[in-house]
Image (cartoon, rainbow, N blue to C red; front, side, top):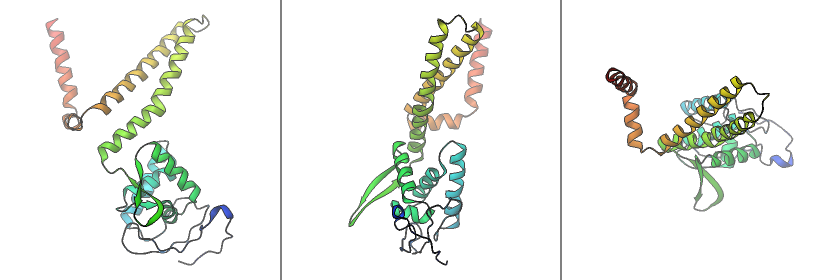
Amino acid sequence: MAKVAVPEPPEARNCLSDKVIQPLTGRPFRSVISVMTEITDLKGDLPEAVRRFVLEWGNLGERWGVNRSVSQIHALLYASKQPLAAEDIADILGIARSNVSNSLRELQTWNIIRSVPILGDRRTFYTAETDLWNLMARIAAGRKTRELDPAAAALRECVEMSRDDKSVDPVVQVRLREMLDFVERTSRWYEQMIALPRSTIITLMKLGGGIARLIDRGGKKSRDLS
């Protein structure tokens, strides 16, 4: 691949790099990085399956309300056998170091990646949580904290305000209380599911629709006895 002559701004040191790295395949590669590159293609000698996984995970992340670069960095770390430094990630994905740093901090707040030391290297390396049960539990806990908890707090305030406000129609008051009840029930369900042992969750997943049929039979039996 031919190198592109691009003026190098001070804040983008090493934005054009021919540093040899070996993150995933064991084969060295050289990359040419543009600071403003949108992550629609990946640099370097990545296996095609890994390349596709990273790109698709980024697309899915956007649909879930997660920044594309955050999702792609997470996918890259998950698919990497060895921990990667921020410089390696920037080189592979073709994005600015500052974007990588911000994305890594975001992933750390979700507790789905962690920093690890590498003997003889002073840089900070990162690796992803690869236990899928832990990963899903942490994502669920994070979404509850970021989405359900603030929604419940806002709805409680609205419900309290509506109680003493005669200008709020009773129908609207009922709707606000119903929405608050729904969000609170969902939040409690999240907490209960996260706290369940892994073996119990696996059993529930295997039961699938059988749980609904069991509940329906129990309800029918109760109605017959009443």
